[in-house]
Image (cartoon, rainbow, N blue to C red; front, side, top):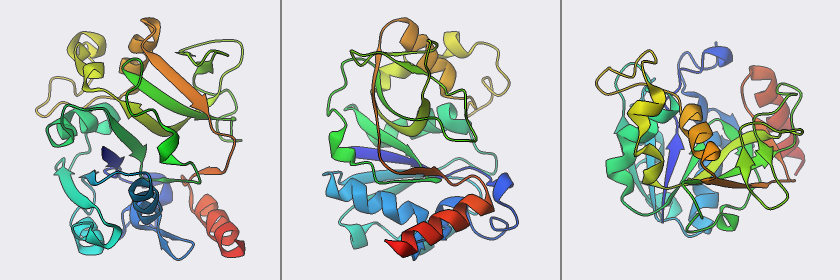
Length: 234
């Protein structure tokens, strides 16, 4: 099984911490945020991990190497000086991810989610992990039905945790879905993943599950400090 870790963001909200260190390499609980993912992915049976990079890209191989420390093979999908956003970044990394379903996870979150819970072969184009809405996203993102389908809207919405199992088929019609969005005609293209997910939801091609455990979006220095303090108490 293969996985992608999104790590190409500029980390602008985390400055000055990210002026010299990419956000996924910031430490929490005594190790880089991304190392927590690598440990849990390896424990779930993943053997190959692709990390997309842009800002301060050279620091990733210097810090993580080839993945042998975790029993993994790490390959890097460099996007250049301008990140390609989530959709463009995933599209750019597809040749390294192969034809089988793969995990994708945001590199700037921390969670105790067990990746082994994800379905090896999702019923549709994607299977998403959702959480109860945090204070910084009170209105949520998507609606999870009782039978496990995910919709773009609904009476009660949960927050997308930045964790999912995907098929490459999610991108089969991406140019029509994205349309004339800024960056879509660039080479390589730059676009968000959310419009593709919403289009797939409209066709009944997205399932999901709620994670009741711990999760942090490390989007500000304060949240990083709070997470670090919490992990120190474990």
